[in-house]
Structures are given as structure tokens and as C-alpha cells.
Image (cartoon, rainbow, N blue to C red; front, side, top):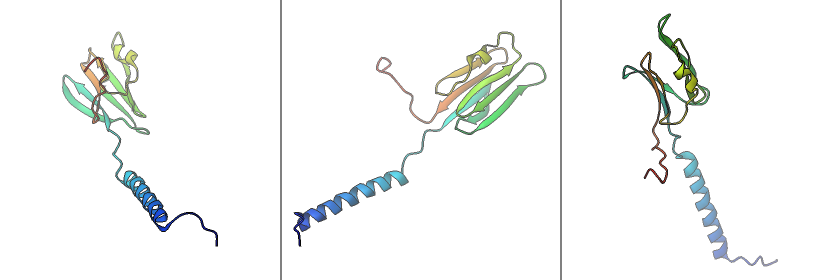
Length: 129
């Protein structure tokens, strides 16, 4: 028989290290933290009207107003925008898609504010600290 050069203690140490690393990987896989939830809050006159989840694969349109003085808010694939309104300057429409907190879309003629909020702490750079 050929001597492999590993003693009984070496084999035990290797088995222990393999078991420890595998148990850590399984623990991380089972108990990994959930990704932070991002939501779009739609407010009219400061009152919360609707909360839209911003996640991949989610699509929703929300019409606010009547036949005239209306806005259509669209949430799709983790982003939100005011797709269409009948205001004169179209500032809310021209803002485009937003997806990261604390971005906002403001439509002053109809007092609509769309804000992206999240459960994760805000990103702060070195200057703001």
C-alpha cells in the first residue's frame, strides 16, 4: 500500500473544514436576507392614494381624475412614471421613469406627487455625512 502522507488528524481536519464551509453555505442559502422592498407612493393633496410595488414583472396603470384633468401613472418592471396627463407643460410626463429612493415626480396642476420609498437605509456619500 502506498502511503498518502495524510495522517488521521489531517483527514479529520479536512473533513471538519469541509463540513464547516458547507454548513455556512447552506445557512446563507436558507436564511439570506430578503431584498429591500421598493414602493411608489402616489399622493394627491398630501393624502396617500395608492402604493405600487416596484418589482420586476409587475405592471400596473392608475388613472387619476376624470375625462378632463387626468393623469395616468404607470408602474412597470421596478420603475414608475406619469405616462400621460392633460396639463399644459407636461412637466410630470417629461420627468420620465424613476426607480430609486428618494426620487419624485411632481405634477403641480393636479397636486400629484409620486415618490419612490424603500426599506433599505438611504445611500449617503462622504460629503453628506
